[in-house]
Structure formats: structure tokens, C-alpha cells
Length: 137
Length: 227
Image (tube, rainbow over all chains, first blue to last red; front, side, top):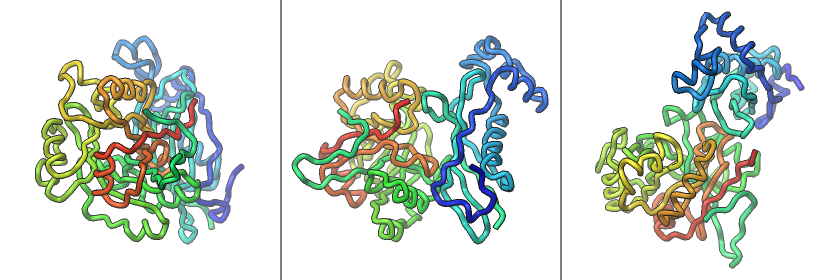
């Protein structure tokens, strides 16, 4: 379900979960486009040699997933900021789930605040944060 | 030791109070939750807690007054602190102004022994939190530093735990005969109430909370969904 106006939104609304493509080929495409190319993002063995649990999904890619989820829910939303706290790495080739829930809204300004989390299949929070977005009145 | 899920009831019919003992607001550097939104969320989702304790990182928040919000939402809102020691992070309940002058809450290298000694001297209760976590949890440091003196309670359910962290915490608590508390460690609104602590009696102030923890009549609860 998508929303188009602030009046469509209620406190506590849950955004549709977005399961992004974290496979190696997709991450490789992203880091090339972002000029962040490096083996820690595209090579599990090289990442493990650096002491990491596996190749990492770059933080800016996770932030992109979060923004994408907001726009899937509210295509006309203007995202004012996405503010993230990285608690644990998001690993390439491991499924993750992008979750959002509305935790504040102001009908006068059209602004909503959204709790954001990136979780894995075990339900563990890898990344959390908040976003603020403005919807048409 | 602890219970998972459900809405516990006191079999004797006495009043029980369930508080989330570990939350952060925007006052903490990594906190993103505004306290009014915590209150709204608890009521909107009908969470089985009667209140929460704001345990801001490396400080005690004297400035904020949540009494109006507490009345408006019918919730207990208390304040405490989360400080940092060589054994990891430690919640301190029952903080007084005098205690905040006894050591530097902002110091990230506090000796745990000093935190325990000064907390007890000032009627407060220290509780190592997320003790099963690498680097910032107590269990990770016992091998190198030994079992610390004076710890009586640890957090055995933490809403932010990953992997085996809660299991390690519970095993350590069992081995060392520590009591356990639960707290969500919420930094965003929707994470409040994932874990909590049930008290056998009223807890309406920071002093009563410290007294209840010293009294031992409490139990850790987890409301986290099991994956």
C-alpha cells in the first residue's frame, strides 16, 4: 500500500517491509557506481582476511535501501534526512530486511518521522535510525 | 531466573510493576527517540509495561522534567545513567547529585570498583548491562581481569542483543549467582518495551527503584519475538 498525502498517515503505521538484493553481483554494481570499489565489499575471502565476518554491504548502500523503502511507501515524499547508527555489519549474500514505522507526524507541516531498522533473518538489528520526510498536504 | 513473553501476574494478587529499565532518548549521543513519542508508542501499541527508565550515556540528565508527560500518559518515567568501565557498560540506578560529583560520569575508562563503591556509598545500584556483548560487556573481560567484586545484578535480557549475547549473560549470572534484570536498550521509539523487569511492588521514584533492586524482588522479562 502506498500513501500520497500526510492525511493518509497515522502514528504507528508500519511501512511495507523491503527485502533488498544484497547479493554480491548487486553490491559490486553499487560500489562501482559509487566509486567505492574495494575487496572488502566484493570479495568474502578478502574481507575475512581483514578480520571481517564477510564482505560488507556498504553503509551508504544500506542508507539507499532505507530511502528506497520510504519511496516505495510514499512515492511523493521528500526525504529530509536519513540518520543511521550502524550497530553490526550487514553482510553480502545474507538476506536482510528493511523495516519502517511512523513514530511522529505533524499534519501542519506534512512531516513524518520514521523509525528505520535493517534486520537479518534472526531478527537482529544491524542498523537503526530515523528518517524525516515531508508529504503533500 | 527469567521469563519470556506473556503478561505475568502476581499469584498472590499483589501489585506488580513492569518497567523497561534501559532506554535512551535524544539526550544520548546515539539516541534518536523523543520521550513523548516513547509514551505515545507504549499506549498506541498497548505494551505491557507501566513505565521506563532513561539511562542516558555517560551523564545524568538533571535538566529534563518528564513529570507532565508521566501524568498525561499514566506512566512512570524515571532517570538513571549508563557509564563506561574497564568491564564494559554499567547502568547506575538511584543516581543522586552527590553521586555525580563522586566520579566523572563522562569518563569512558572508569574503574568498575570505583563505580560500585561510590554507587553503594550513595544508595545507588550498579548493574553491568549487555554483559554478553563483545568489548562493552562484562563477560568478555572476566578472563583477563577476573571476576569483579561487588556485582550483584546484571542485565540478562537486552533488547539489542545479537546471537548468543543474552545466553552468555544468563550463563554468567547463573554461574556467579547474580540476579538479572531486563531492558530494551531502546535508542529509537519502536524498540521500547522489548525487554523489561517485573517488580513485586510499587516503584514510583528513582529512590524506590534502587530500593526495589536492593530488595531483590524482581524478575527479568523478554517480550522479543523469537526468530
